[in-house]
Length: 289
Image 1 (tube, one colour):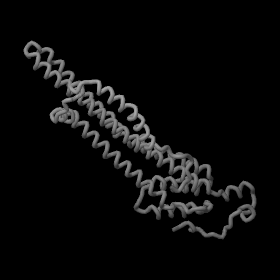
Image 2 (cartoon, rainbow, N blue to C red; image 1 turned 90 degrees about the vertical axis):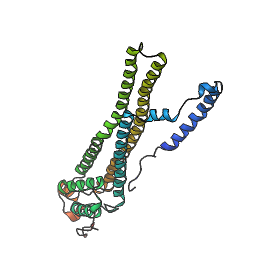
Image 3 (cartoon, rainbow, N blue to C red; image 1 turned 30 degrees about the horizontal axis):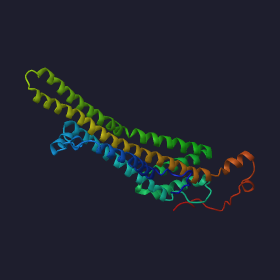
Image 4 (cartoon, rainbow, N blue to C red; image 1 turned 180 degrees about the vertical axis):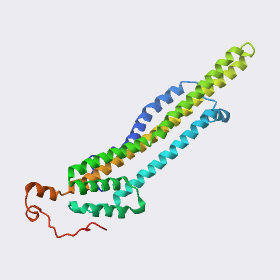
């Protein structure tokens, strides 16, 4: 990217692999040792096709799948938008290595509009455009820095508020699972009034079926919720990093290169040729593409 890094990135995926290797190296031998001491009948589970169908299919499970798919589609679109926004750093919106004067602000705004074209909108381009407009009117680098900071906060707040639907879906998935749990428990409890009419074997079979519905819904919902929350935090971190990178780019390539020539000349009371260290032979429009 077109700005200097201030810290080393955290290698999260290698650390995840290290954590998995450590846990597996400790837990798998202990699990195998414990399993060898049990009988084969006690360790085998009747996971038949019918049992898997009851686990994965049901009205609550299907509702959870709908919410899960909707959330993933939204998060995928947000992640692709972050990737598109990062392409603005490769457009060279500001010329490298030149001091920016007050009279250059409008030319740089037109340069940004020309380079963005129909590929926008970009958070970086909008931030630079607003900062240059403020510099053209106030002629103060401090005001420009305030505009950059305020615009970064606005963009971050907009990104957070636009995630409200995904936050609701991440909460709704386990809530739907708990609805299935309540339905299964209620169905098993209602069988208690019919115990005299039902044989004990039939009663245990129906009660076990209702309890399976109760715990299966919770299991599926919590598993889907874990995936959605992981994806949500990943996308949010990418969006926050994007806004921070845009703010750092504006500080390094715009704010730090601003030259307040007119303000300094008026405060000292000297003519322009005696105070300005820059040659004034360049014409307007020198930054246009």
